[in-house]
Length: 409
Image (cartoon, rainbow, N blue to C red; front, side, top):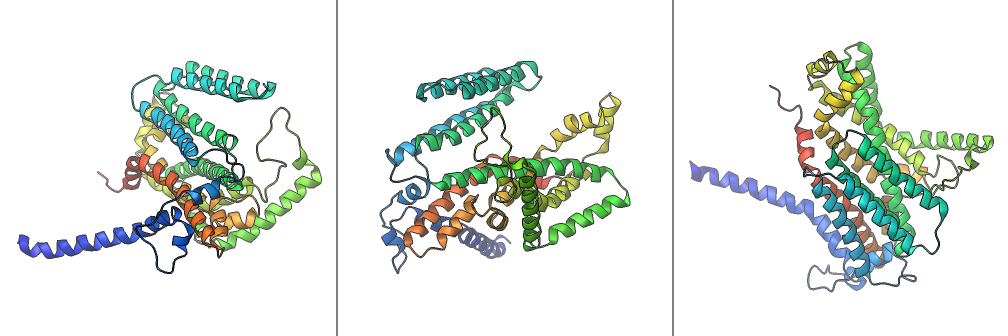
């Protein structure tokens, strides 16, 4: 009996191995291309091994070679240092330790560092930084939040500081601005989509009227439309809104005491705001359907018991239902993140100059030079690694979220 099962098992495992190799091959090929010299990339016969490695593609894509004063190893050292500090805060968040003094001490150390490297002390930036530290200290010791969760705040602050400090420590190309655009668009799209999706999914799961079914069907039909059906309406709508803002003089408003980065005037077209609004509109039916299916599997008795103990419906939703829904929120958030992070069409049409990294990579691959191919490969590896790291960190919650509701009983 065992011998008769050996051949089918061998065939099944062989097919699975081939599928894994076939799926991983493009990523391995891209990594190889990103560390090759252009002569090896331009060779008629692909050079798969025995080639010399270099980091020129990464240096040329991210850094201004003419103004670069340090070796690429210094840049890698800075990235590793920021990642190590963020990882430290992330690991400490798993322990029952108090993260408040760690976060405040780290913010104070960063503030001292900024004062040391500053050529002259500016009043308003220093005031705002001290005000933020005071607000964080007040919230940390006045709110009844888990003390260990402040380690997560330390990790977020570390990543923010690394992204802010990097272009000031080394001369970067415009592609770094595209990276910031990708991060801002992805985070805002994810936060807005999840917030609306949670409320809408909860309401539609608890409402049994005919209008709820109509809303779900309309949302599904909206989701089924091709992307090209949204581009022109959003483009002309954003253009009309920008014209109205300019006619009313709203686009030239000057916000006192605050210098918003990368914002010269308030507009929707050729700005992050227009991209975020378009992506939220397209992705919203998906989040609503996902959260509704998850909420359908959450017993009503949980919130009813909380409301019998004196909680309002909003408090029951926030303190009882949301903790149960965390795996589903993380799973849906990861899918939303991938959609926004890899978006090309909306960015290319709605933002002719405020590109994100996928648009920048496509502009490189259109060239005939082998140098652009290596730079595009380096950029592809650079923007893929953060997503891989995020998925690895949240894989446990992702599996729980995808499996939620699959088994009842």
